Length: 222
Image 1 (cartoon, rainbow, N blue to C red):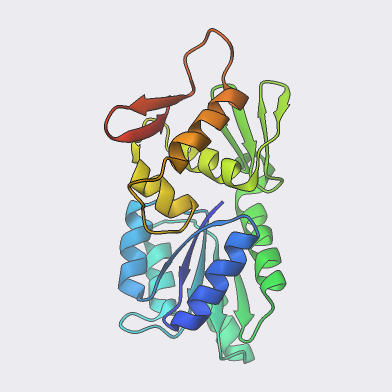
Image 2 (image 1 turned 180 degrees about the horizontal axis):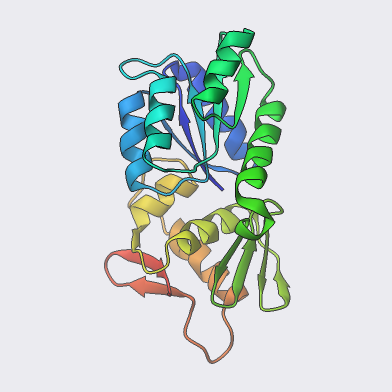
């Protein structure tokens, strides 16, 4: 599941990003409300972790704009103000849940899973591309009726590709989003993982589910 963290305090943003990634989420982060609106408009996310106190457009303004635009993305608000009026204000603005600072990472993870389940339901938690099915909360994969054993990074890579069938991802994009490092042109790590995935999910004699786009990268076959 892909989550956008919007937090202007870099240490907190890094803490939340690291904790969510360790819990199996694919995480992006930004630090301003207007940047969050731009990213949500152009990229698919399963949930938003949104700080209330942001430079420029604050979190509640961002949340209202998201809801006015008809976007139903689950939102967990973070704030240092935990009073009743603040909580009611956040929920009235369209938040799905509200978590005052400081908080335990385990609680944030649990609340994210809960709001995603409530908003989407169990069926929407299954990502399907042809015969491939990914159970996102359980982090399980199968092709047809056959269960496929995947490592955490294999699952994250497959999920990223499967969310946008037909979209070409460069090796740089895949490396930086899945391994969270600046791209090293000398590495063939992405190619190695794609080969592993193909060995696990492709059927003998059939075209690979993951297509190579020569000189660019990879895409999931529609």
